[in-house]
Image (cartoon, rainbow, N blue to C red):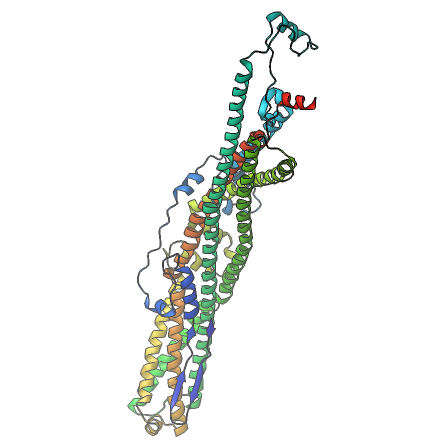
Amino acid sequence: VNHHATKYSAGNNTNSFQTGNNTTNSIYATMNNNYQQQHHPVIGSITSYVANETAFQPEEYVPTANVEQQHHSFRFGHANDLEALIVEPRGSNDVTTDYILGVTSASMVILGIAVLWLTVIMSFKCAGKKRVGFLAGRLECPKLQLSLNPIAECLAEDDENFSTQTPIGHHHNASSGPERDHKFNRKALMVRVVFVISGICVMIAGVLFYSLGVTAFQNSLNDVQNSLFIVESTAFESMNLTKSVLNTKYDLVSALNETMSDTDAGLCQGPSQLSNEIREAEKLLVSDMNEMSLGVDESLKSFSADLLTVANTARGMSNDLETAKGFFYALIAISIAIDVLICIMLTVTVFSAKDISNYFTKCVTCALIWPIFVLFLALSWIFATVFLIFSLAGSDFCYNPDEIVLAFLNKNKDKFDSAIFAILIFYVSGCAVVPQAMNDIAKLVAMVKTMLAHANDLADKVASESVDDLATDCGLDKAGAIALQKGVQMISGLMQELEKLLSSFKGIVSCQNINPIYTSLVYDATCTEAVDGFTWLYGSCFAICVCAMTMITFRAALYPVKRPELDSGLST
């Protein structure tokens, strides 16, 4: 935001006063274009700040159904009060520990499910195909059984060396072969169908992970950054206006002192009626200016440092969010990789169903599919727990965000000046009680408007006289009369500039300007988009984990059926 320096130029017979304008419209137009694409108009130009004096009713916050449900979710008897965690005295860990246990307990349950499921799969693998069948990892067709009489069957059970060769006089059960194959084929089909359906569910969950979870997370980051940009720009603009007000006030006091010095310590000392009116206007102007100068110093001097802190904080948070966008791109890559991997696994399943097995398919399955699949599955379990923690913590914050923000500000109030702290409380609390600092600014604006009226009245009286008549009436020489006209015009111009700057500052820090930025940042970007995004990320990620674990359980579908009879025939 550029502020042109105030320039004064004077000729011999005419006086001219030129003031630069605050060139803030361009940056606020840029902010409007970015912000109004997704939200109602909030930020306007300086002119709109001055003109907008209507009563403002802040937006009432109502937690979403998702926030309500997650905030009241089962926490195994632990706390869900985030505000108590913030207001907890330093050095006390009881509330902190209780809340952390509550927000992580559900995640620990999820990790427990993952460990238990993995243990069961490993137990099935160790048990072997003879005990658990395809759950051990391979589909194996059972051997052909012989039809023996009861005595021979009893001998076969007791004698381990009993020959499995078909004895003379004994025959295969003609119906056992087709019936056995039919049952086994149904089992193999069931395994492959469950595997394929689980793979399709993983792909659907991956699409939801991106379309509803990652997209909402990205929109939330963008909206938070836009809001932080507006906060930073508004803070810098307010800081620059504060400096401009102080500088203009100094110029105004200097101009008055210089004019009085050029007119021999008094603007007009003659006995005429005009000189009496000028002296009366001068007394009012000097009195008002002393009061205004004191008020400006008390109200605005401490603002600059705090506004700079706010702007730097907003910029730092925005830079941190840029780093978070890298995490967003990693999530996109993971969702794409999962879908591609599932497509490869389903293709291998089709090959195995047709008993196609060669060196290439074995290498793809063992060296490519399983290592990557297990890696992404482990990441999915970790992400599911992390997203659940963020979702629950975000819901706890968004259940009552204003009180939590107020608690945070009160805990860190020693970092702010008392005036700026009261104004921040004013914005967050819905502008219910106007702080003294806002009243002081309003009084300053009213005072300067009164001063401007007095200065214009004085300027009109001085300008109505010629230089010679003014010199005669005020007891001045010609140079003194010219200095009086020039000084009064300069004071009037500076008064106009000061009134404009203060009105602009009042408009920028008004509740109807700042509170919508706060509600957009907290209510919309954080408590709606971010919490919904984390919920979808957790839900879709957990669905991916469950379906992927089902695929591992039914992993026998990836391999061709083992037929011991054919294998033994080929070996002979």
